[in-house]
Image 1 (tube, rainbow, N blue to C red):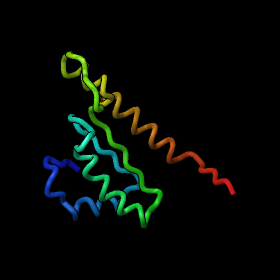
Image 2: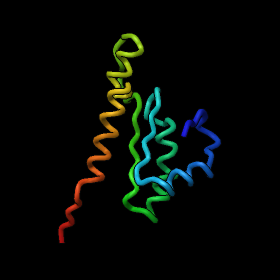
Image 3: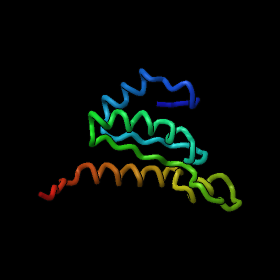
Image 4: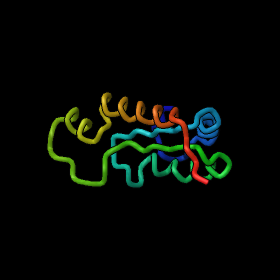
Length: 104
């Protein structure tokens, strides 16, 4: 999904994405505080009532000062360059594929 605007949230597309996926990853080039991912978190929490295994990963600029650098360096520092995104998604896929151990 390419979500250009925070509001209004496209409820139909969000429901489609939630129905077809176990993990939702939001990536944004701005702060994760009060950003798009944070806005979706409320909707995803509501969906989690019916699907407790549903996961949501928010990737973006952390709530701290990012040192002056060119754009590519800043994206890499925040982990939202191509390599950082790929590594995080691989990690999510691997953790989802791992057998789950439940204690009694």
